[in-house]
Image (cartoon, rainbow, N blue to C red):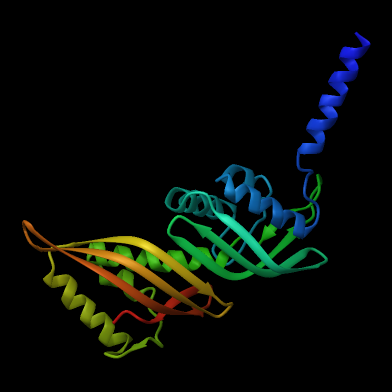
Length: 241
């Protein structure tokens, strides 16, 4: 009996040693997020997030929606950090994330909020990436639905390309969409490099245009898009020509 109890105690000790301890510092929370992203565990991530969570995209509910969408589209996400610096309740540095058809690099800065059971994350879970993907999604939906107003909502007033500015772009898209029988957009890959105030996106797309009621044409396209930060959003500033 004593041997059995001793063996059980050893097993419990070994299991405890293998189980990651609860994160306390901002760097430990960052590392915990990295593990959970690879496991596609949106619920586990939300378990590290305070109910008061708020960033430029939204609160805890919006974060949960975005995480589930990320995992559904891009699968397990490998999140790494470079030059993380911890100051009181904040960890800042550079984040690199990779998934199926997605590569991203950009700023990383999470902050913690105190709670009765210990600190939890109060802000900073990839808001730049989520904002940029939201802008690209609206552009795609504008093409697929033919609603050019969706595009105008995410195009900066500073937009420029070889054809002109924002008004010329909107006019050109309106004519193209009105003349088409509909379009499907398949995103093959994204390479996003973000800064606090701007971003560059290299995208590979397949455009399937319905040229008549029963005819289609397919185009493979590669784009380099530039975006600028305006308020709490990243808007398209070039590259749609």
